[in-house]
Amino acid sequence: MTLRLPPWLHSTTLSGSLTAASILILILSGATLIPATLSHAETLPLDRAVRLALAHGTSSAIAAADVQRSFASYLELRNNYFPQLIGGSGLGYTVGYPLSIEGSPPSLLNVVAQSTVFSPSGIQFLHAAKADWHASEIQNKDQRNAVIQDVVLTYAELAKWEARLVRLQQDEAESQKLERAVAERLQAGVDSAVDLNKAKLVIARVRLHRAEAHGSADVLRRHLSTLTGLPASSIEIDPATIPVLPPVAFDEDLPEKTAASSPTVKFAEQHSLAESLRATAEHRALLPSIDFSAQYARFSTFNNYEEYFPRFQKDNATIGLGIRVPLFNASQRARAEAADAEALKAKNQAAATRDQVSEETLKLQRAAEQLEAAREVAQLEYQLAESGLEAAQTKIDAQTGTLHELADARTQAAERFLLFQDADFAYQRARLTLLRATGDLENWALPGSESSSANAHAAPSK
Image (cartoon, rainbow, N blue to C red):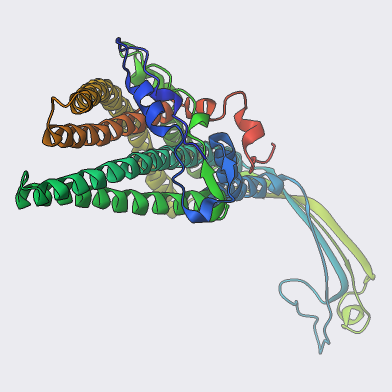
């Protein structure tokens, strides 16, 4: 396998015949460093990794379960306006007057139908439950974006470490050549033992970086396996499938845009609405309400009904309305006042959330601007280091340079490569976080697909 360069590394802002993109392409071309466990792996594009994580991830399943629970709570209150039919029997032996069994007279068959007809508080509680349901849908979308961000960052960082392993493998080979050359010069009396130790130190540093890269790549591959449900041994990423990061318009009012579209803000606003509706419902619980009730019962002849009721008949039915008029309820008034306090608290929390999201978005926007500049600096420094390495190698070929100059140039180029990778990934992470904040992450990671069709755990229909 040949590792391919992520599209965002193809810089078009720098001039000159030698760019970091061309250098990295030369470095990565023909590379064959892969773990043995990946010899038969199938390429996993980024978009497929994201879809698998959304379909099989535990976080998405938990958020979808919360949506289902909220929807069921809404249906529970709504269905109170449909008659509830209960059938049963109150069989029992009677001595003397036929007493009731669990509030109903003894009967062979007892059928009861009940439903709410008019309840000012019930209507508001129903609206509050509906607001909670919509809030859980918003939270589900936010969790979905969190999963996408996790997958993309893991995928991009894994690509970074795999590219670093390729470079370190080449650096180690060159360092070993240098060590052998210094050892020969030591035997010839040209170099000292200190020079040999310096060459060994370079190899030790490369091996340290390789151990770090191997460990980080293994951990990230394992995490990607957990997210997608695929075996870690079958995961082979393709950095070329990572879409190009869109440019950032640093003069755009992103805080205002984010505050208007952020799932976090929308969730806080929906929660505030639900608490306000619940407070209204608690106040309206002091108003009259009407319930429908109907009952049919078939009585037996062995419960002494005929002895105490001269006009006894076996089949009996009642239908009517139950009207309740609260006259005095101090505890309900206190409950309504507590609900008012909760509603005020939720309203202030929603305002605070909006301000916090706007402030964090502005910080992200400015951080992305700084990291983009830092990435360009690191890229230029890496280019200069590579140019210095080429110049040192040219001097060696022309027998006008020293071996130590070449070693120093190679060490500096290797260090600048690592710094450029770190700066590039820091910019990617900030940029992806900003995409999530503005609500554009899913459209970027899954271009051409709508959220509703891509969501494996769709919310129930109304």
